Length: 346
Ligand code: EPS
Image (cartoon, rainbow, N blue to C red; front, side, top):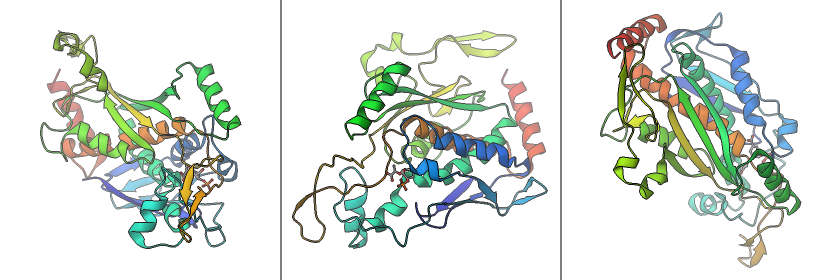
């Protein structure tokens, strides 16, 4: 079983993650991990924090001479802005953020104590974990990418950018939809029933836990609800050179909780960032009187960055599913078992 845990506050010393269950023998290319971290920091509509940080990973355990040992891999990303002790209090919770729920849950007097951990800055550590998983998936020619499909109702690149610029001018923020695409995934990953075994359930859990994601769909997703069965399901064909295949992929590569050999296609809807420079109504934590929600430096739109996080969240689940099916200790053994299986199902 592959698992990970992250720790770190947005303006604390560092973000850390421990990834356990990666097999021995994987070349851990730090440049490729840093490339993923850089991609997460980019995208149109990001805020000033991204000018300050230059996220790079330190691999502090689980590796010798650039190759994984099979022991836990500890990853560390230092924060350049580590001003947590001097940051101002946040006394009027922001609607949409974890501020109020966190204050009530933990008995805090300052939403700063909530947002430092609730911040999407944590996704940098998740991307570092996912980037290691991507290195593993590379060994099996599985490739994961993402793209922005829609921003605030607009779908063309120009109109999406215009929407973000408009939001900025109006001191507002804007959400959207991104797609994650996984190519080269063999049929047979996952299982039919249990929530912790179905591949779609595991992917959904991994992606819905990215801050700001409010809905997720596979393939046609919500679109299935408008169709007849005859218009929905992907007819099955066979060719000697490529084995079973489909001419459509409405299922998004998963049928009955199991990958079917087609590309895995995931769509996720992200809400607009909750820190609004023209703030909504809120209540002062101290006086309980009406006030405007607190404001601080933030982003206008992070849908593109969330897509990168989504890719890496997907990479973790697919790496876990490969390890579960083909063995878990030694990369060469796992690859042999994988190749034998791919030959059998053709
Ligand atoms: C983020 C860092 C944060 C925010 C953003 C994501 O930096 P700061 O709060 O110092 O400006 O830009 O956090 C949020 C959107 C949030 O809701 O907390 C990052 O590294 O991605």
